[in-house]
Length: 217
Ligand SMILES: [Zn+2]
Image (tube, rainbow, N blue to C red; front, side):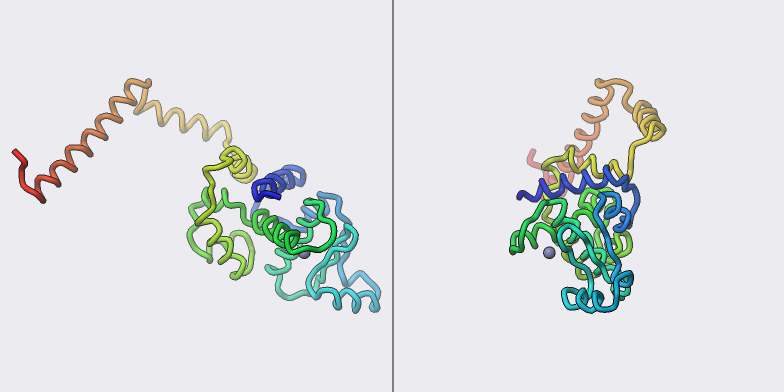
């Protein structure tokens, strides 16, 4: 499955579960998707022991997610939960390296959409940890991926994800239009301003050239 298809799935989930704020509410997403969810502490003692043998964090069994509500590392568990949701929404069958990688990609992108990192001008692991409530280790990987992520491809998809969290309201659109019209009444005015700026830059760079190399005349 292509990475972009996995990111499309995250948008589907945001819309279906009405997710609008960060850090995303993992339990709201699981219940919103209608995925049965059990806390270890709700199970009988013998079953808890069996669950802990499978994972001390979280796991999926036949479309049902079990999670250890006493697990101390909440940021890590958020990733595990979204990884498990990934297996379900990506219709994975059986275990394979490819499936694990896809579930990780899903978790990473649903917890910290790259378009939001771009929108908020984040450039540090700390920003990512604090805003998306992910572990430092995950934030490191997210930031490294973000730096090489081709956001310009599939622009509309990324814009739609951004709009789930930062929708353009009528007011902001109106302000932007008014502000712009002060400077650019019509296209020819805009071009005049543009030519002025470009021209000025041109003169400046020429001046610098002459300063450094002496006049060519
Ligand atoms: Zn897995």
